[in-house]
Image (cartoon, rainbow, N blue to C red; front, side, top):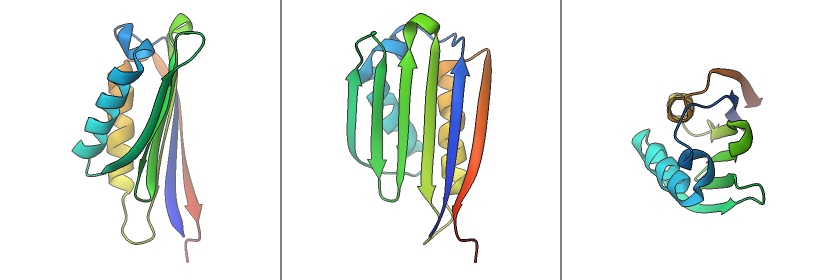
Length: 120
């Protein structure tokens, strides 16, 4: 098993307020962005949180994207995971994470990359 797990903490997001609170808008955009990098959504769960933020995940074959937002803090977190067992999908993961960061327009980010599993 091999994979790549990317995370991003996004601070002082300058995107429009609906991107931090509208779960349906965020779902549609995330699904479209996943397709744009070559990942095919198979299922999803998105909801509005008690504080008015949005949280959701999209599942793909051997992959996922998760997003959580905090409108009052103008903040979001995102993570993208891809399995690289059959083929290397790292470029797809990086493309999707780049699109997420651009969508939220944070003043600054903290990003991490973790190689998962055996390297053989």
